[in-house]
Length: 286
Image 1 (cartoon, rainbow, N blue to C red):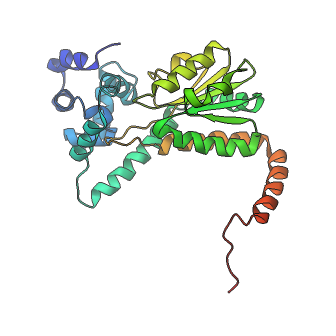
Image 2: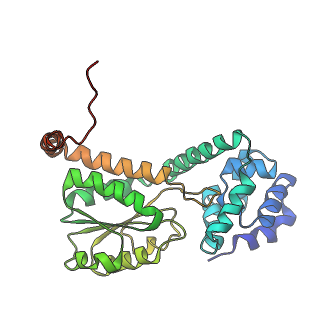
Image 3: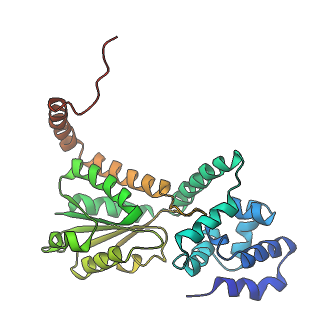
């Protein structure tokens, strides 16, 4: 894998003044810069947003997103949670505006996900989920929250889903895994080993594999029939799952559109069950 920092260092002598400012900031902040949005990097380097994009293309990348992937790949798996916390302290100020910067970074993640979405792959994923005999969702650690959400709603729509979070506790669920099944792996840097191992096993068993991950350099992608990328970058010790959750919402919505009749019948039955067991709080008559 190429070293983006070596490329920047090699070409800095031929750069314009504004590009030198960006290059200098990146080279001096190699653990912070990969997690910054275009706007954030522009602010830290003292240049305009468009200048950052032109900087990336001048280096031969298709855009900032591609350059950022290479920067992240060189540091993400080495950063500890404590180091990522230190980055957030450097980037987000403690004034009230710092709160809005977090919101803005989440908005930027959704925007980046929309811009790089492979619509054909997305619709292939929807079709695969609809045709699957069984759907296995593999998600661990913080990504388990996404797995629980996806499993809950696909379970209502399709009734053939299983959430797998541990090889030790759930390996028996995979005993008859085959080409009629779909395995959907969810993992983001620092990529959980057990998710990669189970996802790789699914590919070896000829199951249809769908990856929801942060970029095409993810270790899930080589084993994915259908890779779906959702930006999760944030200069913080937490993962930003706003954009991945939005992508999952879209998957659920499009699967639901194809199963409307079944859903209506199932929800009518479920409403009766929920009412019988008094599941939801009812507003008292005024």
